[in-house]
Each structure stands twice: as C-alpha cells, then as structure tokens.
Image (tube, rainbow, N blue to C red):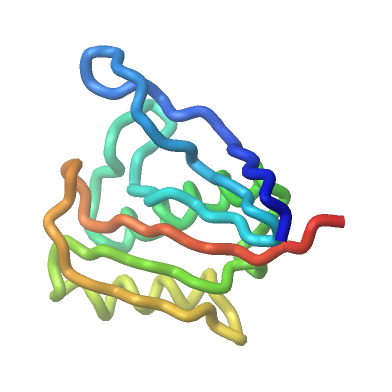
Length: 131
C-alpha cells in the first residue's frame, strides 16, 4: 500500500468562520475514506423533512465526495450510519437499498445523538485501486 495520503475537497468554515479540522475524503493506497456526511444542502442548511429526505440528501453528499476521489457508490465496501432515532431504521433501510446494490457493502448502524440538528450521519470506505 502506498504511504502517500491524498486529501480531497474543502471543508466549509464552521460557526464563527473557524475552519473545521478534517478532510471530506482521504485516499490511503487503494482505499478512500469519506468523513461523516449529513443532510446538509449546498446552502449550508440541514435538509428539512423526515428521515427519507435526509437519507437521500446524505447519500447524495456521499456520492459528491466519492466523486472527488474518482469513486462511486459501487466502490463502497463499508458503511457506518448513525441514526438519531431508532424508529427511523426501517424507512432509512428502504431508501438505502435504492442506492446500494448487491453485493452490499459491510454496514454498521447505531443510534447516536448528533452534533448538528439532523437525523442521520454516514461515513463510508471505498476500495478503488490506483491505476
């Protein structure tokens, strides 16, 4: 594996204009690690609506960050999901299955309080060998 680490994308400033200390995506060899994505729209506001709308926006954000590293959802091998409310699991799961196809990535899903006012956060690991 290459020891070179490549960061992709820019992180918008947080409250008070302070730069947030992470990269949206980092490649280490043939693996691409995507930082946790939430249902944040391009204007910086959280997607209004329930878990279905927030799941779609979150996965859309994951797709955008994957694209920065030349990857797609088909390259994803591991997904970690945090849900604010366990009652949202079945609705989330239905939407998730629209985006991720067989063979499904490995996945973990847990309940957690969120750092921002959203219902879902998702991080992924993709495998895409360098040419």
